Image (cartoon, rainbow, N blue to C red):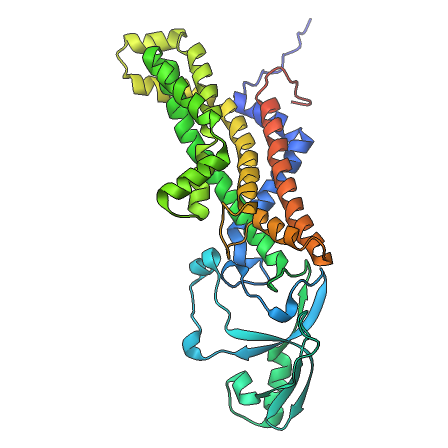
Length: 390
């Protein structure tokens, strides 16, 4: 009687099952997609922005507090060659490029010989602006026939501009500032999480592994830092270095989040340092720092990744709150929290509603994405959760 051959059992590493559980978690994958889109916008930055000037700070007084979808014609006036600064592509990606033109929103225009007459767009603070006259050669920076110059002005220097998400109280494009604000939020989150991991792992590993007076000292340090509100710590750091800005926010947010990491690492090391392989490493004379960083910490990668995603979301919220209070990122750099504050000051106007709502949605969506991904990673590292069709 023939016997049926058994199918070979494929041995897979634990990382395979972690990836499978994560892929089957729809909310976590949704959060991951949102994070990847935000990271692409943060890295590309000025490439995706309608206003690619540094800090998206090209404000026009005639365009203050316009509603989403507002469109107008803009006359581009060439600036002197010595006032135009060219930048390479790398500098453009990181800090943008000053505009080669000064812009004038117009309601109507007409040509008169070698000049163009424009009616500027009425601003919110004036009933009407006076008719303005510009020489065609000044607009184009070239000499030539009047008909050719008029055609060039209409084709190259009179452009239609649409502000899909409106403008703020300084006449700046809200969409551009929201996109650049993604870089601020993700940047602060990344640096804050990095600082919290470095400090938290060091403090927690020392206290958990050595015990005794070292553990008591580390616990005292964690308790003291845990009891200090993050806002008070930011104020203290700002006063200590006599500065306010994005780097102060980076450091301050990071230094308020390491305690949770340290507590997790300490607890894990307290349970792992009694294992047989740790005792064997001590008997073999392996240095203690190698035992910690080569044998103990690699066993905590899962919990550390989960706590890092949760801290990322917390860092974004803390940064937004600090910027709202004026203690974080300083103008003209765009921050979602600062944009909410600007909209809050105009809450009685229609534009104020959009200025509060749009950055608030961005903050909520990005925080939700990190929380969903963190929950998905927590489940993915749980071996008790079954895998369908694995």
